[in-house]
Image (cartoon, rainbow, N blue to C red; front, top):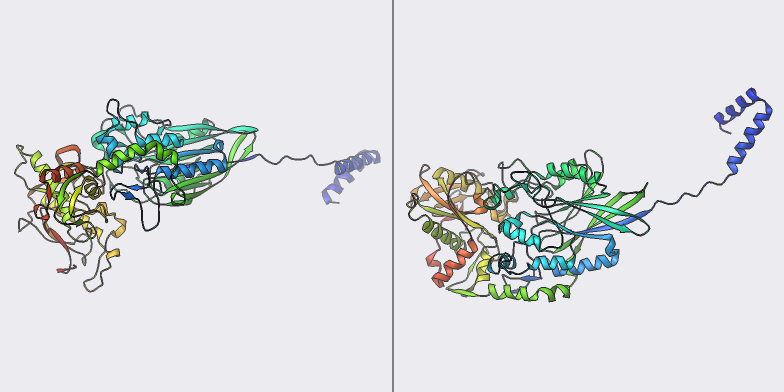
Length: 601
């Protein structure tokens, strides 16, 4: 017998006598013999939240630029029609009532299909069509989608029209009215998922978009909308959602997991903030990550305040992957609590198109195919971007020539008409080709894959020199006697191809044997060393003009002119007017890579 139990009995006997001792002993024996009441096991439930992101108008597994089924070396497949098949499979496996389907933004820009229904047969026209992305997502049965930054590329009217065509909300807790600072879009979705024999599970989806919209689409949003930081807005909204009874809180964030921002110090916010949100804002169970176009099957982040694990996942863009968050819950005192969250990915290459989507949207797809295959001119020779990132390629000179011509005409009769016009362009694609012979809209579109517009900025020679030095950081430093590895030569520091610029109208060498910041050599204009005090007009795309890529000086430079027509359209107009695409009309050798003065190629 345990010592404390024996002492209790001895004390009882001394105080009340043997009768008491007998009573206590008997009672103790009765307790020992009594059966333990059966305890019910806790009620458990599992729900699945499915997620896509950065669809960018990929409806079918089709490459409009090649006029063929999409293929890549990794064997990926694309398109919402494939996502639909996966979603149906998951709903059959888990039960429709136990699933949600959400998206993390960038839906209505990115392919000739999205351009067509924004500009050629616009959804904003009276009696215009329903956007095919809206029709597909409605049919698949999305529950909510966050706003992406590219949702604003065609202006607020197009975005609002698209929003009106959806059967589910577009979420953007940090997209607010510029004057009142009140939400301009629905901040969240709060949905009850019914559980047989138990209370419903209340799931909140908080939508957050990217503050960079204020820079990248300034022409559309300035003075109308503001975009506070994701982390700050999550800290405001998540406690509200919990106070409203949310058992599960999911954040759909059009923001990469982490990494540097492409706008430098122009904004006080972080571009890729998902991991920071998970770390600093308590009360979040999972985050669907977008914007960065990378694949994150599952990443776990510990919250600083609660010590709980927050699970992040980012499915590959263009509808190539579907994220699954499996959320295990336990019923505790009438409320569901999250025990565990796990994430995984499903691959659209493993399934076929959903025939419902194919049948529903085939006619809209065919209209786009016919449009992009229009012939607008004839090329005298094949032009390609295969080596454009390390050699001055005529195909990029075509872009700069068109931009120069458009800006020169626009400035005619102004005080700046006599200034030299230079132009910036980037090697967006490594596979674009304009074959000799018929030139189609799709071939030209493959050259300029973004819906950027044109801006004219006023810069000095010194500012242009700094601009070029910044761009030249794109190359890996390579000693004069070292072998040149083409695959390792570019993208130094993770700089993407679209943040490397040609500048036409100047001649210069890029000495990659030198450290970054000291690479631009023999910089000249019209054969003479560049005058640092001279003024120039730089024709530049709106992304760069507004600070995209954080190039020095250009964002704060005086703006002389801008327009809303896409550069891609201007290229098609230029080729159509010429009729013949001949490099002698646009090609020039402006720059080359060197090492201690010796050309690399």
